[in-house]
Length: 463
Image (cartoon, rainbow, N blue to C red; front, side):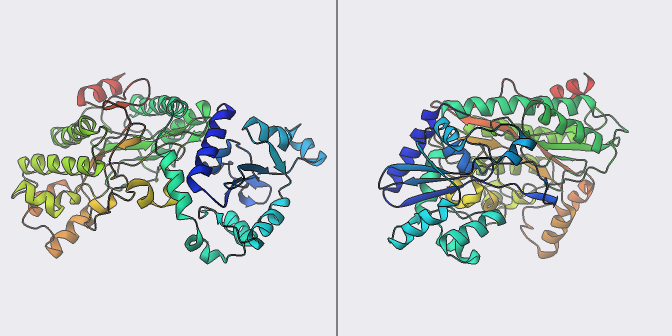
């Protein structure tokens, strides 16, 4: 948790931006796994964490933009709770720890909001993503669950995005910590990826590092020899000679800030010539994005530059053909990279995406493309100091997608479909780093960069 003035300042700025009405920010509740008393690991709502800082279930925060009043709603524990959980800090003291002077019982929230609604006051809220919170807000506000999204406050979403998209010094320090845990996770896999080792063993040990040094993984670990499946969470394979292992994983530190790295390595410990050719293209694309990402540059344009590099280099290998600029304009490189170059990162690994991707990654100045590949870019807006983004180009050979394009003659003037048959069993390569935009350019997050060149990866695997 940060100093209380950090949270007080954030809430004051939010109230100023909203100008009038009541801002309602509910926290999360425990979520049962297979019976009521056995719950999933608790994860607080990130908006609540950002403005109220408390990592406990069953709280809600209210900010009255007209009166400048802030209230924390929650319940003090009973003796039965103390028997199982031990002594707990009072709600009043928790409120004070984050600079909130007034606290009430959680049951008082319904009466408070009912009075505000009766008085015709605007209640600003962000559409919830958890079913428990949907039910709660529906009951509190008298809005059908199906209408919560439509009635949510766009003004509040835009105000929160404008704050959270620029990370302060405290947040950057936390993300650096999360990246250091992520470094340890990935380096472990590089050093222990050996032919015959079960994928599950590597994934389990990797997740264990995240648990031993932080709050756990920032998302479900992707560790697979089928890198052509972008989000492959199956770990049932055995490390096999000649294959590539793609590992996309990150950590969430104890203050709930995230990291997200991807590395691809040869299961045999040494890249084949064919693997090395594709790997080098992706590595060069990753470095190109790092070179271009700076204040004032639209991340959409960096994405296009990566596509252009792909078109040039894949043409040199005989996998693409025709005019490079025309191929990029047509979206032909999307056959090989159907996802976007990167996303925002912070308290969420895909930061703030519960608000809506377009609000976070595009804003009012940028518009989402309708073209395949381009439309998948989660972050397209102009970069500013304080942005934290991922840089994750990839090249994948997805037989089903290739066959679809071939049958439909999609970008046929730019794709050498007959040559691609030689790559149907190749898999995929993705290389991802976490980047902070600075006043003069950018820097990688974490104390050091994971091995990324062909030589570095092979040396790490030997080590």
